[in-house]
Image 1 (cartoon, rainbow, N blue to C red):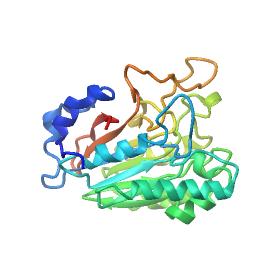
Image 2: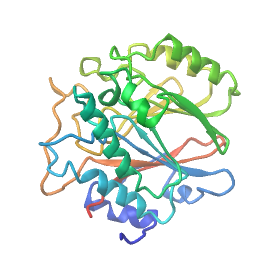
Image 3: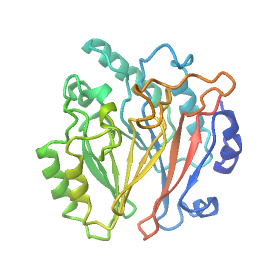
Image 4: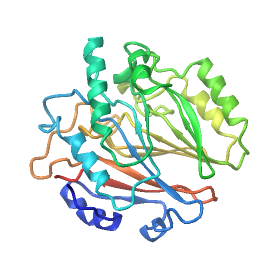
Length: 296
């Protein structure tokens, strides 16, 4: 059993698998989590369970290492959310369900009391999310936690990379219940803006979702899909992408193809990791730290 470590110790271990990065407040601010209405959650993304081969020689072990790393935290998060591509795509519906069952069994070992999921295109685009919903429930939803309103948007079940009119109407109705100064956190898989459309790093009607969000003064969007950190603003809305738990991808539009980055034998798991987000119902923006996959 892994020895429990606190988050400061975890940061010191970052050299084992990557570099921890703090955005927003300095680390001392993170110590306020769980005081009054403060709390923290983890974003994990793009595990691609079922992927095999280069560039990750530990494709069958990386997810388990990430689960062990999270479980070793002395203070467990209020919840964990996986922002899509839980499994790697397959044309075989039987194999698709087998991968989802295996993924669910592995992450069932997380200590956190609440774990939430949303699909990626690898999970859902070939069958409009049918298998994914069998295992994980609705593909889009909202919930409230300690004064913050969370919204999960499905921009992958439509193979054309659209959110769709029905879901956009739902989003508008859901947000209509919120005050314009409400704290709102949105989760998506693809970016809602045109980051690199030729690489499928965009949502065709994402601008409509951003338009719905724009009247609210305190909105932050966390997404996956691009297997790296990227930070972008649409007006006052901040968008932050997460690293992957299987392989890293090149910077947006930096080369002709989005070929995965080569495995670094001298720094295994470099570029992979998950995110801790400290949030509050107060006016301060979410604060977050990037954690590496810690080698067992």
